[in-house]
Image (cartoon, rainbow, N blue to C red; front, side, top):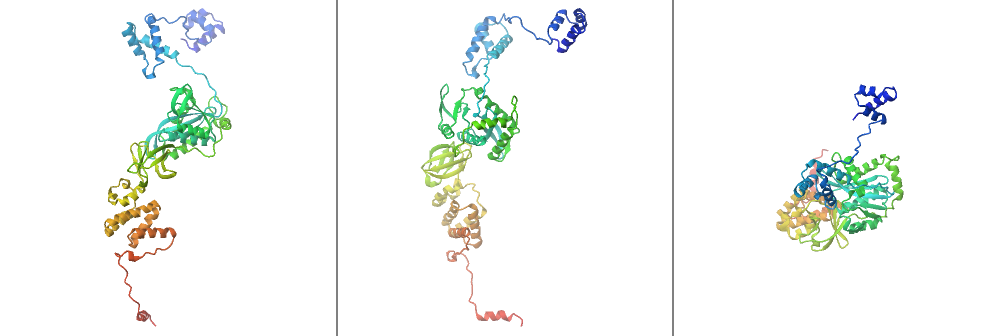
Length: 499
């Protein structure tokens, strides 16, 4: 095929310079038919097939191939025929004698023409789409897979992104609460895929049985919900595109942050900075178009939704409560009680009746045990022989003065010294580590080795009054010997003074 430059030179030679077609054909080495074609078209028109492609070997089996491809549309994507498999079946089952290439070429064209077509959509102001994405990140010095929620407002293309340790119910709820606060309002309607976090059961068509957590969220914020077709990501193509955009632009290179909160603050700043962009086909920036979305949003409720998963459980004989494959401790006096577990993104809170009895950092491991040593001290006080083997106390970072106090207590009181040591530890149930440590150090300095002395010094420290210890309670300490003063002693002092 000749280039546009050749077309221009030939056309100019004939139509402008007035040279004959025969002469120009001889000069350029082109046939006169081609010269005539160049005079009809200003640019190369391209090849146009005049007749349908003839496939003499494949023709009798075209209907068979079409039937296989049509039936494949009803099958799972991973169990559909490839061109190679169709070729093998034609040979084995139908006696096809042709080659693989003609089968492959026809299947390619047939699949290409059978692809789904889409209708361009408009998006009303105030509507949103939500989806999760995944990316690697280093948080707190540990590399892990992070899950990030993206909420997109398709009318303005404004978006919100928040990262979490896992794609869980509490992360889903927390992401919505943060997104609504970021936008300053609640979208009128939100489009989702059929995630199990929101959909308990697909009833057919647009009908869905919602989960309790999702229903509570929707009732609190009063937004309408809509769900896409199963396995049809193009139903919410706007947010699907933003999931990829966030990964490529906000998470490359691999993010490194000391905490999840620090990372989420950074993501919010990135979303705000994106509002300055002017996307292709729009005369306004994202921020300017967002004002129309803002005007259509529903108002925020007076108080945000409590973004947590609520699960009932029972405390076992080891004073542990199981939540999401991990065990969390509670005070031993609640053994065998029914409790309510509130699972937040970064915390697990356990309540009995209306009282919160334990709080722990959330663990995303499996079969981990999270202890609070204070929960077991009351029981260890009764069973002091378990003191050295108590798993909740293993690895408890106590200052060195605690071990010194225990050694002196056990040397002074034998087996009762361990119980007094545990009583000292139980002061941490009421007072801070810093306050108790200071009282122990002062007791060691004074030589008053005992629970009562530590508690007395601790209370004096808090009440800001001088300690008044009864030394008769510590007979092992050497008392000071003070002899009676005589009048002659003063004369001795005066005798040493020069007149």
